[in-house]
Image (cartoon, rainbow over all chains, first blue to last red; front, side, top):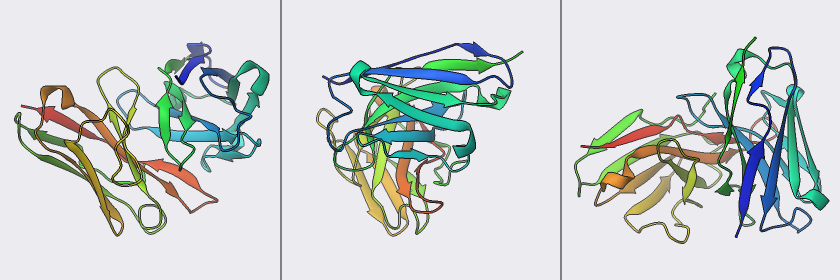
Length: 120
Length: 111
């Protein structure tokens, strides 16, 4: 059974760096083909893909946010970490981590999400 | 930010058929498969359809997907009250070194 759970601060100040951790179980990020991604959703708005990391440490980023994002993995801890620099109130959103299917690029398992508010 | 366009809302009475469109371009839907996610109120998205028309285990067969050219559609036949949710299409986009794009979302209301 695959599960994922996001953790991190619920409130950050403008210009600060956000660090979110995705802790998962039921699969290993050392297995060929496996990937974990991050997606966010501002309140009342649509989903937006942010980043993804593969088992071989290949990393993909949303072009519009690439300069602010870093995704890393700790295979031994079954964790993926996303950092986003220079936070702004428009970054207020629920942040989800999700398991990328082994078959194609889609997310077949999602975490519950964590709401991050950016405010001074 | 969304590059896939969906109607903001759709509605139907129980038992009716509802269709949601998703319009993209040659760099996304035109050259890659389409996926659909269902987001019930206050919950995380759930994969509903993958690879244009495939249903994951546990998804009722009243949900079906199709794709033609640079557009895709999700159909819900025999609409039920528990289908009231937001629905998002998504696809890989080959532009800008590649990115995964979501649709603008459609709120389905069961009247």
